Image (cartoon, rainbow, N blue to C red):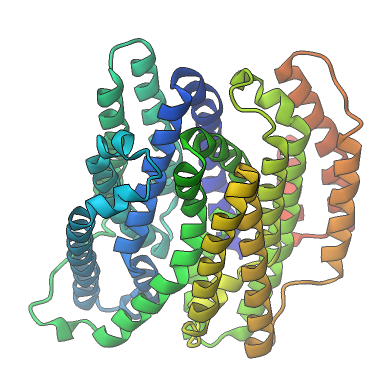
Length: 491
């Protein structure tokens, strides 16, 4: 896990800078500068683009990570393999764009009377989707070769910086609305170009399209794997986009914008987990190749306790400071606390169950995850249809929380039954007790200084309680190792 922790720390450093920029964009600049409908429109366009990209990607990112280790010692076949991946992605994206264009009118009919506002910028969805699709494949290549830090910086930080510049240009009337939407979409293409240049110059992107498809090992096996991974990943990814899309259709663009703000704030909880998953994936693939179950089990438990402690504490910090870091909204979007709390708890539960998804998706039994994942996607859509008309954005949050809870319960039971592994221990219960205590303590920190000072004091006080306790109790070897390094550096 050493390489996991090191790269996770580096990626987290850049990602939290990106989160700060994302906060400025999502919670301050975009809602303040754009009208509620225009802000909601932007979020719906992005969610639609993400969904299209995830469909077009067809699981090829995971295929790249899973099979690249087999070509380490054969440069020619490695180049052919990468050419195969990009060839399949290009062909599928072409087909997908064609299908979307053909059924354009049907898609607009689902917009709930808001098709005019969306149709004007429909081409933007396809442009952003293609940029995201190929960025993801290049990003997976960098992950598989353990060079994900800079691409992660571009994806999480530089992209948001580009968008900050774009919204400021709109604010100062340098861009009109149509130009703003176009420039916003170009930011995704610029991020793709930068990652493309990086992977090429660093030598990890070397492509040779095979004259004979048989030059690539087990083509049928890889396509089958991609198909099942696609169906397996789509429910997880779609859950992040369906809420916004269905809110836009069923409750209006304003609701979609408000939910997007709450979702973004809650998503901060998962940043450490995302970095751990990114670096763990190729290690799990390598461990399965070597049938090293002991290593997989150890990583499973380590990921669980580390993610629970970090994610749980970040959620406590967020909930204790919600009123201070959302004051910029100026009552345009109110009562976000319960939405943030529910989504945040769902994400912490997801993190606490560890890398169960990676264990399944990289094993020979990856097909089994397909059945309950597709079922849960259907459940999420049905739950949204029922709950959004009744409870608005709270209904969308309830639907997501229910889906995430059921998905992870099933995955955890599956890994336990099939592989004899489970992520929990006595440390898990102790960590929950500590997090609950810190949360209760945070409710007594009623401060009346400036917003920035209030947040600074709460973070300092809660950290001063939480970190020494988990250090003394040695709940996580990795976290203790990091703290030991910080202590030594101070001497």
